Image 1 (spheres, rainbow, N blue to C red):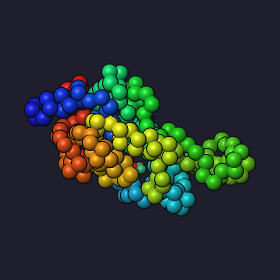
Image 2: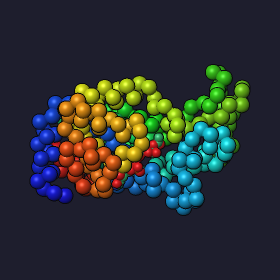
Image 3: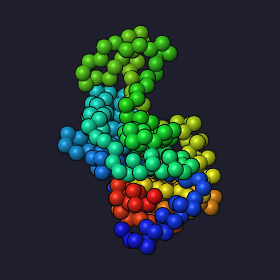
Image 4: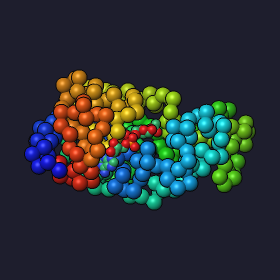
Length: 240
Ligand code: OAD
């Protein structure tokens, strides 16, 4: 980690009055949650996430996609927040922070962050697909999505799939926070998935100073005023 850049980032954060934080899978990497694009190990190595994480894929192969989510739930349940999650929770105790995440793992909340804006939903939530409005589950069969006892509709994971809109309130709140911050901190995202990836650009256009924390080059480096090429769990605790 470049000490001069770190010191510059620390000063910027200390002087900021509204901090907007956008996190991605990299913030959970040190907890052992595979980043989304590396997630398909073992049993799932044959599948492309962009083919599993769609409504069409779910309708075509519900048991397969449901099992993929059960696998991910089990994997995430065995993890703990890491120093990056704890540092972000601590920052919000000291300063006005809006924390927006693309992650669905709930680790920010487990570390103590409150009012986290989840742009892509939550891995542990379910909702009905084409439900009758009075849906009630029958006891689930292992490896199969639960069904409604009344209308037969399936449950689906409460996450945003490819091709779906972001939850409207979360998106509105995230955009408002991006547009009104004076410091934008982007942690552990490849910056490839929109509309989340547009938020740092909105912050920058409105005059915010943008800091990217990522050990690898990312698509948001071009938007950043300062790039800290380091793992989040090492870098964030050193920043405040
Ligand atoms: P990606 O898997 O695309 O990118 C993870 C980023 O984290 C990469 O840029 C890595 O270099 C970086 N990284 C890895 N280890 C890190 C560490 N220790 N500290 C900091 N950064 C680290 O994940 P996202 O950008 O979150 O969407 O992906 C965005 C969205 O694409 C996901 O929310 C998901 C996916 O499709 C949906 O499911 C809708």
